[in-house]
Amino acid sequence: MPRGRLIIISGPSGAGKSTVVAQLLRDCPLPLVLSVSATTRPPRPGEQDGVNYHFLTSQQFEERRRAGDFLECCEVFGLGYWYGTLKSEVSSGLAAGKWVILEIDVEGAMKVLPQAPEAVTVFVHPGSMEELERRLRGRGAESEEAIQRRLEIARHELTFANRYSHRVENRSVDQAVREICETLSRIRKGEECSKN
Ligand code: 5GP
Image (tube, rainbow, N blue to C red; front, top):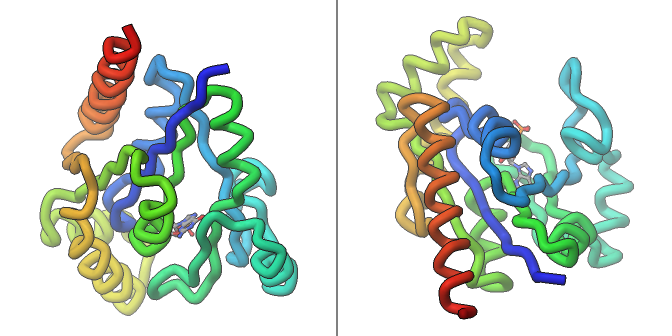
């Protein structure tokens, strides 16, 4: 069985990262699979346990952390909830030859990288802070305080962008998905050539 690959995708909230990842999984003809993280944050309307996240209580999360079940976990900057990548999600995907996508924050990514230096890292960039602010305000659903908080988190995340091997500007979701898929396809092709 071929061993798969690890792909880490990060980027500030409002950069459209989740939409890009969902469309990438749907449209890119590579054996991609999403690692379902664990979190202590409550589900949002429409989110399903085991599909979007494994929703855990703080106690369950702590027990799993003590048991060494996480590849990485952290209290995500500015949110006050814990999130973690389960080793079981990653190892089952890799063993099946899949390209396992971790959609995680920058601090989680920096913890995984030393353990998996061969991982492909992609930073989804919103373009500029002005563009990000325009998008966050365009959603129209949040208080000024919540928008300012998200912008603060985004500024923090953007300082990590140059630590990623690939940066993709999300001007349009279709284009960002195409770019990431092409990058991954090129890497796969390179691997196949080097085997022959
Ligand atoms: P949300 O609550 O909006 O789904 O996610 C909030 C943030 O947590 C996002 O930046 C997301 O990428 C990050 N995140 C989701 N799962 C994990 C994880 O397993 N580990 C880490 N470190 N961050 C995660």
